[in-house]
Image (cartoon, rainbow, N blue to C red; front, side, top):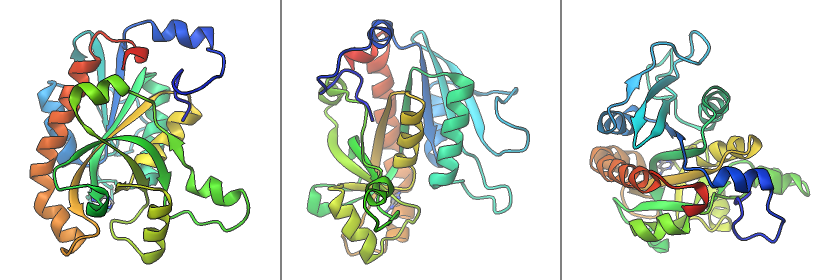
Amino acid sequence: MASHGEGSDAPVDPMVSQFEKHPISSILIIIAMQTEALPVVNKFQLVENPHSPFPEGVPWVHYHGTYKDITMNLVWPGKDSTLGVDSVGTVSASLVTYASILALRPDLIINAGTAGGFKARGAGIGDVFLISHVAFHDRRIPIPVFDQYGVGSRQTFSTPNLLKALNLKAGKLSTGDSLDMTPKDEESIAANDATVKDMEGAAVAYVADLLKVPAIFVKAVTDIVDGEKPTAEEFLQNLAAVTAALDEAVARIIDFIGGKCLSEL
Ligand code: ADE
């Protein structure tokens, strides 16, 4: 992802630099699971928009409100209309990110959620990571250049002041559409140099990049992928407690953002 003035020798776009001098006025938080989303909704006293900006019949839910002069939008992809479970994964994540950006025109996207962590790379249960890079690990296309397209590696919007102020861990994220991990996935995750794996991040980043909206990624570790316990069991066991740590981090991030410009993050 273009890092908006960070780490690049490219000339600064005057429109972008002008924009970055204004305090952030609108945030879009994208959270895939209801268990993760509702505490944020409650904390910021967001309410469900009765006039949803989304097409009739889709399960996507838009909550909104105001906090510290920021228009807060939280979008949860909702429950699958047939099966009644959270619409996790890259397909729903891409669609809600696209539709939400068009409808809500946010200054900044925050994708928050849980993730599996690699203890060999320093992740522990309950750790909250601010993600520096995202990539996919299950889009294998062994043809020159298509291989890189499949991996879709991107730098996230750089927020060095936020990272420092909140004392979060920094790491790379690898995204795929499975909770488990095949040996091939494991190889790709290692090639992506990732400390955490999730099911949405790189998809949100792809769409944010397409539509030129800066995006940051906050991921809390519910399960240790290179540990002894079965992933699904460990994930469900830790979901509630780790969600509390995730939501506290999201609240601190939003507090930090209040009154600041993008270039101050
Ligand atoms: N979310 C939480 N744990 C995960 C894992 N192990 N893989 C993908 N997404 C996750």
